[in-house]
Image 1 (spheres, rainbow, N blue to C red):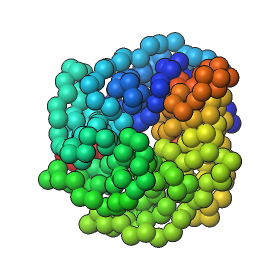
Image 2: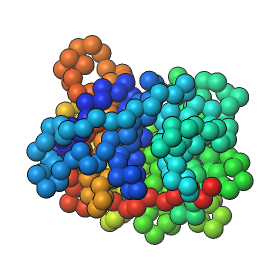
Image 3: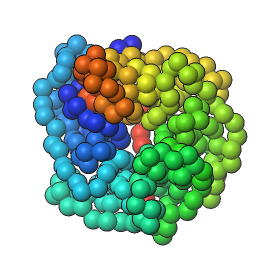
Image 4: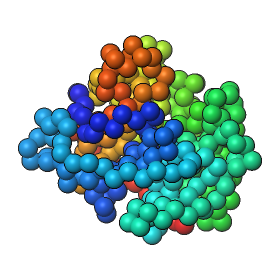
Amino acid sequence: MNATLLYPAQCFLGEGPFWHPERKSCFWVDIENRRLFEYPWSALSSETGLAQRSPPPGNPTVWQFDRRVSLILPDNQGRLLLGMQGGIAVFNPGTGDLQWLLDIEKDLPRHRCNDGGIDCEGRLWVGTLQLDFDEGAGSLYCIDEDKVPRKKRDSVTISNGMVWSPDNKRLYYIDSPRRTVESFIFDRTTGNIQFEKVAVRIPADMGGPDGMTIDEEGMLWVAHWGGFGVYRWDPLTGELLDSVQLPVPNVSSCAFAGEELDHLIITTARQDLSEEELIRYPQSGDIFVAKLPVSGIAGNTCKF
C-alpha cells in the first residue's frame, strides 16, 4: 500500500497524530517548532476516493507554544492533554486556553516528554528522553488520579510507541535504540507491568521503530524512522504482515482516524536529513494518510 499526502506541513519533527472523534478532526505536533496542528476531516472526501487526492483541500489551525510539545491525548472534559517539556498541560482547542497540570522531570531541563497513551482504567502513561538522546537517561511513568508520576521503567533512551492489546492483558512498548517492540504483561487493576518477551525485532535495513498504533485484530502498525514506511507486525509471532510505503525516509508516528477508524494518519520529519536528502525527499515533514483494509481501536479517555 502507498500513502497519500494529507497536508504539506513541512514539520521539522512531526509527531503525535491523534484523531478527535467529537471534533471530527486530526491533530499532530511539530515538536521542535513547538506547534500544534488541527486538520478538519471534512476537508477530505471518502466518496471521491481519498487515496486519489493529493492533497485534499483545507488548511489546519495552528497553535504556537513556548515549550516543546510531543503528545496529544484526551482528558475527561473534551480537552487535550499535551505532553510538553517539563510535564503535562491541559489545552482547550475551542478557546486556546492552556493550563499547566503536572510536572514530569521538571528539574532536568534537558529532558522532555515524548510518546504516551491512556490505559483501559483511564491512567495516563508518558515516556521521557534527554534532548541529546543520552543512553538510559529517560523513563516511563504512569499517572493516576492523584496526578503523581510513578516510574514504571527507567534506563530508557528514547521512550516511544506504546499500545495495549485488545484484551488489555499486554502493553507493547518501544525504546527506539533497542530496535524492538517489547511485550509486558499488564495488570489493569494495579497498573503494574512485567516484561514478557521481545515481540518484534526490526532488521537494521528497515529503519528503527518509532511511534506505533494497534488495529482491531491486535496487529501493530509501527512507524519506521529511516524505513520509508509504516509496517504491520504480528506481536504474537514477530512476523511482518504488511506495510504502507511513503516517499520520505523518516516516518515518525501513526494513528487510526476517520469515523470508521479505517484511515491511518502518518507523521514524518525533516530532522536528521542532509540538504541533499531534503532535495531528494522534498515531502519530508509532511503529513500523509492511507485507507486501510482493517480498522483501529477507539482510544481511551483519561479519567482526570
